[in-house]
Length: 167
Image (cartoon, rainbow, N blue to C red):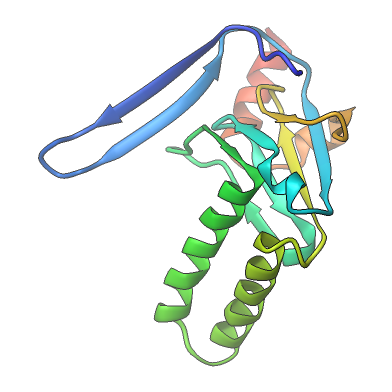
């Protein structure tokens, strides 16, 4: 079983407006890491995913990415939960787009549903410049992010990673 070291979980909510934000912070430092797992069975859908607010999750077979942003949430879920998050966004999208965009969203939505049923093999990839994310499985492939990969993102974590390298 993988150990993430000491973590801090933060949950903020407003009883007036319903706003909710949660995050998971590692209290230890790790190497920038890319993790990937091939989802080949219904059992693989139960695999634990720990996503920090600085990581990107991609599912290449679906053409889907969950990227970090200013208010990106960290979360602890499983592969099925990640697919459900993707499905929720796609369902919202299909109600607000038309034409080719709607057709493409509907096609990806069908693929997500097949993946959730264990009928479509997909790969879940976590890229975390701070190495604070994880996939809890003996089948996970792990490698260190290259300097080129660290320099590629044009987002908040890129600026933080650059500052961290200088310190």
